[in-house]
Image (cartoon, rainbow over all chains, first blue to last red; front, top):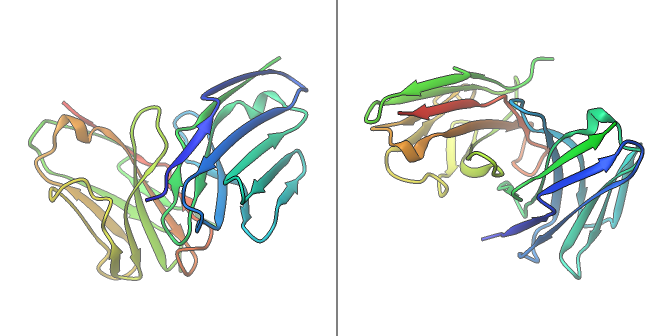
Length: 110
Length: 114
């Protein structure tokens, strides 16, 4: 089955700086890559997703890039704010079954 | 509109007890998923329904786990003879049509088995 690895496991950034989280996947047939944000005790919330027919997608301060050849994709958050502090999960899918990474705990220092 | 809801939010069970966890998907959503999230880990797929049909149950850890969605809306995940290793957050998600659409998650049920 699909195996998704996510790095780093923790990330501390100064407010206003950028944060980058990287994920790799094993199944070259995967074609859908969502990113979820989960605050402590809350539900995972979709923040951005990308399908394999595009290489990059941006939504305000958040962007995702996909390299199908290398089988990796990344989340970029610019101008980080304290409310960006949370656990972020990447996932990969070739159908309905999402395979998640282990998560990255992002802390934004004021 | 209302999102995915789950109940109870917290459940404490003694080892050996049976539990039932409920999921109310977004109204009209055809696809429903259950995931298990261990502490400090990402969610792991358990099972998938399209309407009332359980199309994939490959992620259920043992035959003590059973899920149903008899009328194609509300779903129940049942765990029989709970064990300590069943302690986790159980997340439900739904999507509007086919399973490849965006999945919207509920808040989860935190199960603690003593």
